[in-house]
Length: 300
Image (cartoon, rainbow, N blue to C red):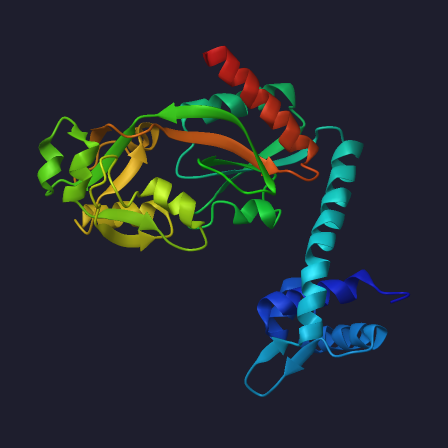
């Protein structure tokens, strides 16, 4: 593969993910014919077909599947190395891309302020992460680090610090029988349908956010699955189910004529933690983790 060009590899990766020449071209800001040209050049260097194209579909050949499996982690590592080199050259300037789920609560807000005071030359971009894809933005390098609900059991990600532990609250419609209660016990979740998380979230993470059984072993009926917090709250307001939230998220919703938020006793606390890539995290991510750790220590 002597003389292989990065643009050829990028074209192949885009095509392997989109399975459409036009969309792959749009991602790389080139024409469809340019994608075809780059693919033919790469296939010529390799000596075999990577893609099968018919009038109806585009698919990878077995050779293409093998190349994709080997190439993707190497390409991601290369991009991370370039990103880190730029960050090192600029110190902790540049941009910290921080992902978060739901709302920016006081704990996260104070950590952001601490980081901003320490690194005034580093811009901070806040990117909301949908419930349905808690780890995807990190893996796609769309964010440098993310604040997500625990647990996190992904081998390629590192968790810490954990900086927010909150009692759990049940969001219900004002028409729900629980709406007038001051609190309820976890065993009473068996009397309502819990709205769950859809999309690409791992099963263990879904179960943590919407358990299928109470601590005592009673079955909790499953409600609809949603992709975002706002979708879940909208279905809750329509009395299509109930949704477990940490207290901070419930408090951030403010007064709503259509929703009630009831504390739940007997459940483990909901936890938020900072998550970043295990391999070559950015300089900004490491600096922000330190700011969070200091904020946790100050609040203890």
